Picture 1: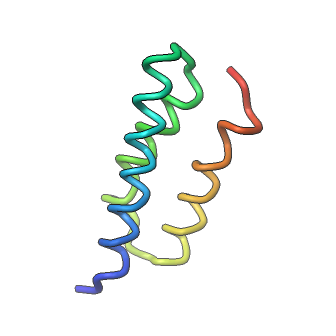
Picture 2 (picture 1 turned 30 degrees about the vertical axis):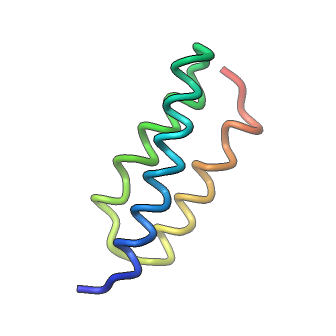
Length: 67
């Protein structure tokens, strides 16, 4: 077992928790959805490069997409 995906999962899940709390308090759907996705997706992705790419896309998407 490689520790890099585990650590990246913790980092992206922490960012997702922040987005989730922010989206819930501000009642904004995009940060809420991205927060949930950031907390869940590391469990299903094992490839480090794909994990990083999806994480970065989900982290920056609330800045550009407003729902």
